[in-house]
Image 1 (cartoon, helix red, strand yellow):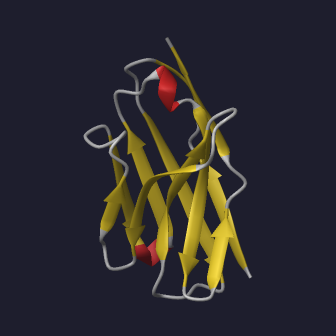
Image 2 (cartoon, rainbow, N blue to C red):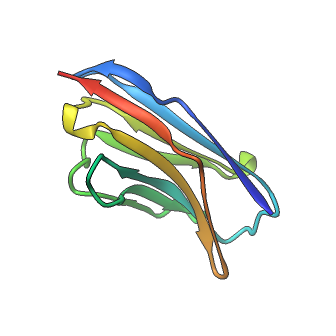
Image 3 (cartoon, rainbow, N blue to C red):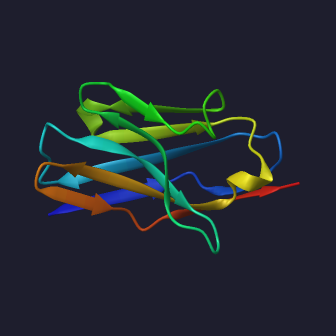
Length: 115
């Protein structure tokens, strides 16, 4: 059993910054991928950025240069630093912790960017 606890969402003006955190606890498999997806109203859930336990990042083109994913393997925590936020970044952001034979999602945290 794995629990994911997300934090850091909120309301921000366009051009502002937020930092999301997601901590995993429970039965942690060392080889894994942690990261962030988002879902805006009326749209499909999409990848934002992920990072493997080996440190390989994957970042969506739409956020490259503005968002940075990082992780602390010792604390099983993944971060998403979001800079230069735009109204189109408004969505529920979900943490995902996955690997061979497992796939866990957080409850989601709302990010709202005001124009």
